Length: 338
Image (cartoon, rainbow, N blue to C red; front, side, top):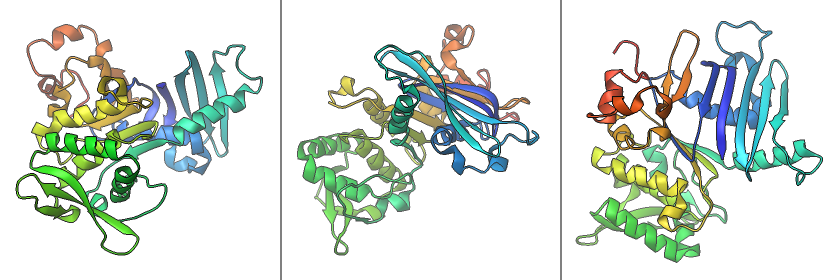
């Protein structure tokens, strides 16, 4: 699990550390570094593909170095890998708490470990049209960043894991009681599209005829029921297009990924990072301030702070919904003109 990511001179993050846990919800105004932080994980793995002039913090001269350091915990050990970029790229082992069980070529070992995790890192920003699009059937279907490929993923799940697919359908009916089943159609040879069947009358609705919120819900729920979901996922505004009454289900879907043991799911936990502007979604985490990170813009650049580490936070959270408290500006992480 990634414990933290430190940024230096990386876009809006001049000198900032993002603390992370099994589940982290980042809340803050536009331009406060929420999305930029997720790019940092890709930078550590493939920093040489970045244009230095496009990622260096504004106002710095060319002698300054862009650095991102990921610290994570593996087998009880705390390890760090850093990437630097000036006009050349260097990735290095910055520190490691090592035991004698590690090989002498620790750099290679840790690089492999990080690569395995980051190669399975995905940032999801769902698009309704992409989710509804028919998908090509293949042996290794994958849900793309925008949600495309969902029909192929569902079709594979129904064939390879029928019990899991049935469980997904039961959960779908609980989330969206007007529907009772995911079905499939073949618009052209080698392609699959999905449908939802109504609980009353068993009418079939093609994905293209479903609402944006319904499509987003099906995509997130599908991820939560995969046998091998990505190791690390970020959801960009998972509440987008979702009715407030469904937000608790969205929370549960993300928790199902992050805490599989709590749901009887036999798989490795997924580290989940989500961003939001929604006070309604934030309300659901009042009892878990350790899962909330406030992103804030300052004159020195954006910064992050875990809500549970704020002074007197227990007293601040008494007597009002967390979303209202955040929206008032008391906690920071809101646009400066509010």
